[in-house]
Image 1 (cartoon, rainbow over the protein chains, first blue to last red):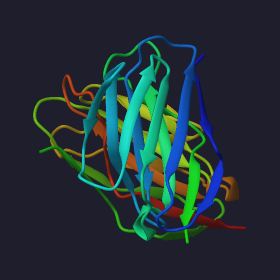
Image 2: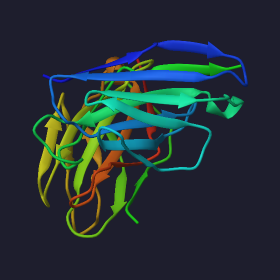
Image 3: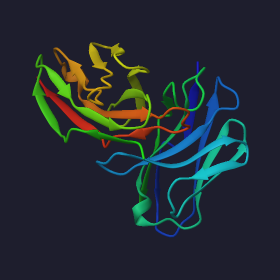
Image 4: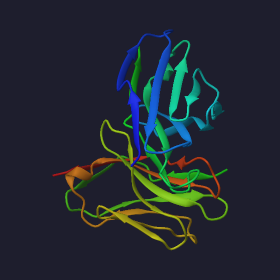
Length: 116
Length: 112
C-alpha cells in the first residue's frame, strides 16, 4: 500500500530563515502530489500540486515554492519565512488505483512548522 | 467554482449520543464526495466516500448518503465514543478534477 513520509515532523524557525520540507511517497509510481497547509484551528488550504517531475501548479500567491526533482519526491521551500507561514503542512497523493482526485487522497503525517 | 460548506463547530456531545455533521456542496455534474477525519496531531485519514447519487459510504459506524437533490453529504453516527473526538472534513472532487475541495472542518469533542 501507499506510504507517505514527511520530514521533519516538527520545526521551529525564526522569521526570515529559509525552509525546506520534504515529502516522499512509496508504493505508487508517477503519482500526483499535493501540498496543503492547515493554519491553527482552520481548514485546509491547497498550496501546490504536481502531476509529474518538474511540473508544479501554484494555487495561491505566497511566500512559498515547490519543486519535484524526482517522481516520488515533493519539496516545499521558502527563502525567507514569515510569521504567517506557521501551520501544519500536509503532503498528499491520490488513493492508489485512482486517477486525479476522484478516488480521494491519501495524506502523510504532516510537518508542524512554528515561525517565531 | 466548486465549494463545500460544513456546519459550524465546535460540536460537543456526550458518549453514546447521536451525531450529525451537515455538509452541502456546490458543483457541476456528479462529483465524488468524501469525509476525512483528523485525530489530534495527525494527518488526515479517509473515513468514507461516495461516488454517485444515492450511494451510501460507511466506515467505523459512520455513514453518509450522497443526496443529489439536496446537494448534501451529511455525516451520521448513531452512538459516538470518546475516541471519535477529532476534526472532520467534508470534501469533493469534481468530474475529471485533479484536486479536492475541502470544507472548513468541524471539531467534534465527545465527553465521557
